[in-house]
Picture 1 (tube, one colour):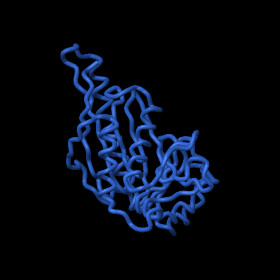
Picture 2: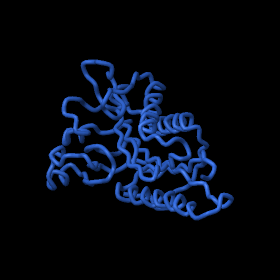
Picture 3: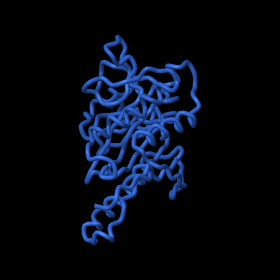
Amino acid sequence: MPQPNKQVQFVDLGLMDYQMAWDEQERLFAEVVATKLDNRYQPADGLMPTPNFLLFCQHPPVYTMGKSGKPEHLLLDEAGLIRVGATYHRIHRGGDITFHGPGQLVGYPIFDLENFFTDIHRYMRMLEEAVIRTCADVGLDAGRIPGLTGVWLDYDGGEHPRKICAMGVRASRWVTMHGFAFNVNTDLSYFEHIVPCGIADKSVTSLAVELGGEQDFLTISNRLRQHLVDLFEVQIIQVKPVIVSGV
């Protein structure tokens, strides 16, 4: 085993088409896996550390359906998608259906968990914890609901539990991809056209709704990134995108 690499290359992709961001995730994921496979054939003094990446972005309106999702949880047909100006992708992360759109902070960690710990449940809880701490920074009490992934408000037996951050990941050879979708200034009307994450009896919210106005997106992004740094005990290396951002 090479020495654990605690550096994370951070890339802010800006507003990017979902397929383009997915392709970039796949490219980086393949790079990490290729390094791991190549290390199998190297002597101990020739092992290469595996890289870690963290992508932040926003997407134009898009619905994504995970591996365990049910098609009937999308309440729009093709004409309906055109009418609301959204696209649709069936993807290989865990979870059901969710929405991504402008004003939502989407994070895609491509981590080799062998650089940290080989426990996917712990990994998910740490992603949740970063969002919980970010909510606390702005005065919101957020937490978890047993048996439900993501971050919630009014989570501890309250009358109106509502999700502020959805999560769905994929991991292979202990390398992760996909991640979290944190509603900062998201247009929540798009969630009316789905059964969010397959949960019909709970609602969705955002920082803007809870705090009574639009939030500074960059400030929230920086706070969340710092909490990830603290929790995973990593050093961030900021790099420029190697692909053209656009929609």
